[in-house]
Amino acid sequence: MDLSELEQKRIQHLLGGGKQRQEEQRKKGKLTAFERMNILFDPGTFVEIDPFVTHECSDFGMENKKFLGDGVVTGHGMVDDRLIYAFSHDFTVLGGSLGIAFATKVCKIMDLAARQGVPIIGINESGGARIQEGVDSLAGYAEIFRRNVKLSGVVPQISLIMGPCAGGAVYSPAITDFVIMTKSAYMFVTGPEVVREVTNENVTSDELGGAQVHNERSGVAHFLVEDEHECIKVLRNLLSFIPSNNLESPPRIVNKDDPKRHDEKLNSILPQNPNQSYDMETLIRKIVDNGDFLEVQKYWARNIIVGFSRLDGNSVGVVANNPEILAGVLDIDSCDKATRFVRFCDCFNIPLLAFVDVPGFLPGTNQEWGGIIRHGAKLLYAFSEATVPRLTVIVRKAYGGAYDVMNSKHLGADYNYAWPGAEIAVMGPEGACSIIFKHDIVESKAPEKKRAELAEMYRKKFANPYVAVSKGYLDDVIEPEETRERLIAALKAIYRKREERPRRKHGNIPV
Ligand code: HXC
Image (tube, rainbow, N blue to C red):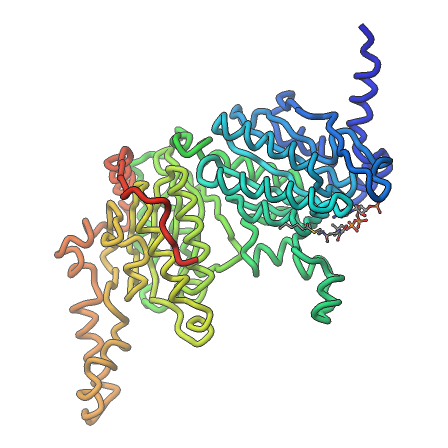
């Protein structure tokens, strides 16, 4: 049997767009599409399919620009011993641009992953729709988008952005569950040149759609990483919290952190002055297993913190107000951020844990005109429809609508606790007294003194957890130091929870 043709084709395939282009790629500090697959998968486990696919386009001299594999490497392998399907764009082939053969390869592995019920990882670096292939490229993208949507909430889909991504190449990642961007990557629908022509704005690619922009300003990305190796590290960590599909539970990672561990430092973690901030992330880390917390969207909408941790080995999705930023108020972006995270956890059977310290919603024309009503409604919608086990700890403030929204008992949370200093009321004492005692204050000889007295009275009566706990709206008031033990016990009690929803096509979340 003559194997030489196969060998030759294999060598040619591995060269992608050619040695020189691969060298250029390396000079920019980037790996090739094949090298990326090799660091993604456990050593020796990557199995490629469709290595010899080529396009059939003959317009614009394309008949002379055929590359085996057509610019995308696809296949399966193991990541930490779990089956994963992946594709990796090859920028050395026609700028990683997507034509119909390329798209068909990607769709094939998406279909295979769906049948197996395993995650799909996309390594993206692409100029978007392959211009020479015209409508075929657009058709190819739409086939991918349709599959992204069909598989949303069925198998996890994660996008790694490791270079420029333009046009259609950004929409598929946008539908996926998480976007991890390397520092030198960028994403935009239309590049700087078009922007200049249309709007007269002068921006660089980085200013327009760099990793920092999408991690800090747009909220498109979820993680910002230094380089491709760190990208894979973060991906592996992320996968460790997530099941392979929506019918499985997340992997349980048994660890040595005592489920009954108390941390006395929690008793004094809140400042004496209720208007002073403190570090919510430290609070979270003191409670969860081994202090491990993988924060998601760390740089965007920082007034809310979301991320993954474990309690007694079980994955939990944490949502916590952050008193260090805007006093932890809810605003448009923080509601969007938390909503998407809550929905992800609910899709994939990850229990939710809320730490509440929220003075309310951010007032102002900016917020009202921007639709805080609609955005805030999303978060209460997301918590209300979540059927996973749900825990809440009110550590300090829980005022107004924000009390309701932050996984309250009334939205269906299973166990709701408060620390002894919790303040739960329609609004803060000063604001409340200015309204309900307006006349008493105005008519008083010393209005400020009167306001302070009334506020103190209000605080004693309403701004405490004992009214809510006396009505069963909270299940208990707990000591800060015992929070871990109580949460683990509660989670154990509700871990097998099954909750049905009425039959319907889908709800209509106010997007
Ligand atoms: C065909 C493309 C291409 C594309 C890049 N190339 N994008 N070929 N179709 N969409 C080719 C280039 O011609 C070049 O080939 C090679 O890839 C490398 O590109 P460079 O421009 O040299 O690289 P770089 O300077 O790093 O810039 C990368 C880039 C830029 C930012 C991605 O190439 C770019 O702006 N491309 C066009 C992006 C774009 O407008 N795409 C939108 C398509 S419309 P040679 O042989 O010269 O080296 C779309 C609609 C989908 O995607 C809609 C879905 C909803």
